[in-house]
Length: 169
Ligand SMILES: Cc1cc2nc3c(=O)[nH]c(=O)nc-3n(C[C@H](O)[C@H](O)[C@H](O)COP(=O)(O)O)c2cc1C
Image 1 (cartoon, helix red, strand yellow):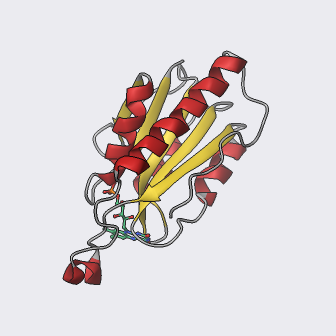
Image 2: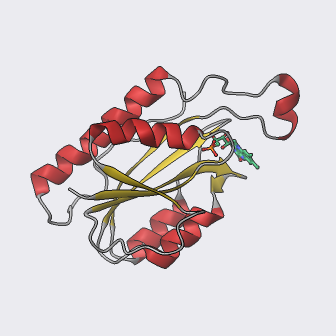
C-alpha cells in the first residue's frame, strides 16, 4: 500500500517524531508541506495529514495543503500532537475529506513538549512527550491502518471509523 503523510512540525519536531515511529511499520512518504511546492497524491492508497496543534487547530499550512492536493475518494487519517488538554477533533480537515468523498479512518493524538508563550517560563509543559509509550501507540495506530487496508485491498473502505483515537492522557 502506498501511504503519504503531509505534515507541519516546527515547534519541537514532536509530530515528526510520531510520524517517524509510524514509518517503522511500513513505507510512508513523509512530505513537509513547508518545503514541498506541489505534489500528486493520486497514486496513494492512504493519505495522512499531521501537525502540532496551533491555537486549537491543525496548522493552516496543512489545512491549505489538503485543500489544494487531496484527491477525491481516498482513505485519510490525521495525526496531531499538542501541549495541553485534549486536542479537538480535526473538524475542518474531516469536513474537507468528506467533501472529497474520502473515508476518514481515524485520528491519532498525543502530547507534545510545549514551550509556547508563558509555558517557557516554567520550562514547558508535556515535557518528554512524545515519550516511548506515545511512539508505541503511534506504531500500533499505523499497524491498524495497514491491517484494514490489507483486508480491503485497494478498494475504498466502507466504514467511517476504524481506529479508536488514542486520546491525550
Ligand atoms: C504558536 C503555538 C500555539 C500553540 N497552541 C496550542 C494549543 O492551542 N493547544 C495545545 O494543546 N498546544 C498548543 N501548542 C503546543 C503544540 O501543539 C505542541 O508543542 C506540539 O507538539 C507542537 O508540535 P511540533 O513540535 O510538531 O510543531 C502551541 C504551540 C505553539 C508554538
